[in-house]
Amino acid sequence: MKEVIYAGFWIRFVASFLDTLFLALPVGILVYFLSDGNWFDFAQYQDNIQMAMSGNAHALDTQPQTSFKWELLFELSLFLTTLLFWKKWRGATPGKRFVHIKIVDTENFEDITNKQAITRSLGYIPSTFLLGFGFVLVAFRKDKRSLHDLLAGTCVVYEE
Image (cartoon, rainbow, N blue to C red; front, side):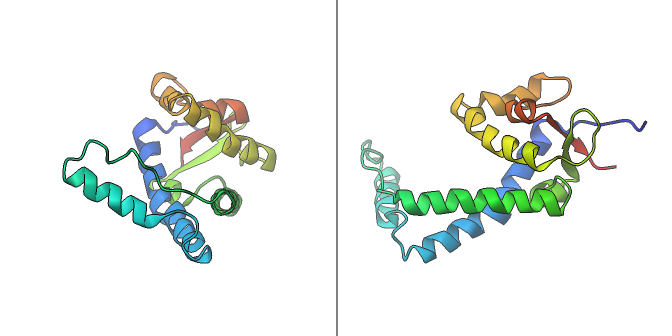
């Protein structure tokens, strides 16, 4: 059996950042324009930035209103896009592919199943809501598994 090299925190962080640029940002722009600007109040963001730049301590007192319908469309679109990439590119998104890592089953190091993909995606919710601890867990485990990896029975490894 070949040697498995687990992908650590920082390489996964870079892949996630790249996925934000290559996946989340384009999907977000598309949803924003589909909503005709009704997804969130962009003007409020601009006002907050101007107040913050001028040193106003109350810059974040007022947050932009968001539309639940458009937010839900964004989240579902991103979820489905990610699942499609995992299926097409055998456990990799554009960011993971760029840095040569992929998601595999923990037991046999083969492609993940649809159930694992869905469980892993939904596992991002508790990983995030636990103050990001679910992601930081990667730095402290020998097998570099995050909370969502543990829930789904997956791990992230370097491609051979």
